[in-house]
Image (cartoon, one colour):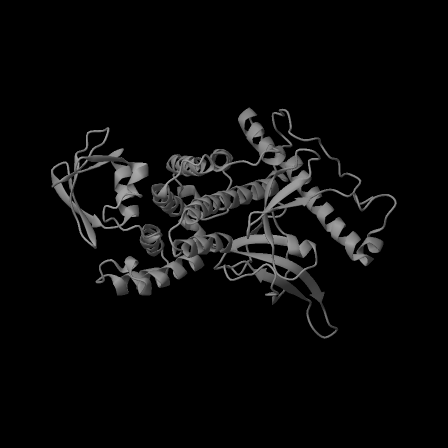
Length: 459
């Protein structure tokens, strides 16, 4: 008996058969065979706006499809692995192309763990470290036994991956605009002023859809003033399609928060995250590092050198392990900073992401790197809330006013606890200075926090 898939549009889709490896469909009279994977079928149904599936005399809503025993394989991360490998190869990642060349005669390599695990590992290492680390979590969750907990964790992890990626874009653009605005007087219109004020002052953590709106505004701002994009490939981003993908991901996350999710939600989320990362394939060209310290070294008989101590923020970096490296160069670099740079440049050209991205361990004089993304201002005292990438917990940074008319810098540096407070004061100062500079020529609206003056911070 034929299995009819009905939809609210004009497409006529019939399931003609399901085997261990494939699903045979008849779409508007034409036969098409797809891989027997829930994620693959879901991607097709979404593309054709199919809302229900009929099998024999029973009709399933899409949310019920994942729970039904129809002979459909329910393996996680098959779609994202295959699609991202193709995208990486098309964008010049040589190892990805070599892998696809070796497996082109192997039908369904993405279902064979011998090959799929190699591809997944390559994907996680290909993307800039903080995104690669999130992808590794997603790949690991996919291997767990099917359970309600797995579904919830998978959906949440996919959402956080997309959230951190778009935050990284926004932080990079705002950091560059901050620097550019120091030597320019670019005017901000009312909409730009409102959005950027929200970024700096909002006490409610913004969601993915909000970050997408901010990204569109920043992209338009750069284009309007003919400012070079700091990340190659960003100018080619189709912002409208990207925003639609973000809205779909946000909707799926909302279904989790409202306990309206199902197994099918996981495969929908996998498909949307795949599209999201395909839009941001440019991150394959970038790395990040945390600069712990820079030492000036000059001998009587040698030229001066700068000894950089830093940690590469790759997926193998653990926040409580000492993985510092040294690099001796003829030029200095900003300290206590997190940088993003083209991986082909050895961080000769970089964007300083501080104070929007901080290494909490550097401020605390602790080993390893604890990377935190700015999240929001605290609602009660306008202190800064950051999200720790490892577990999404909150770290708070407040202003202690350590360096004032009654203190000296050298005395503060002698006491570790006082020096730590001073370092966090400087993060707070940088944040407020960034806001002041970015919005210096704006149509001022109401701000979400009190203005804090740092004019006399250093006495």
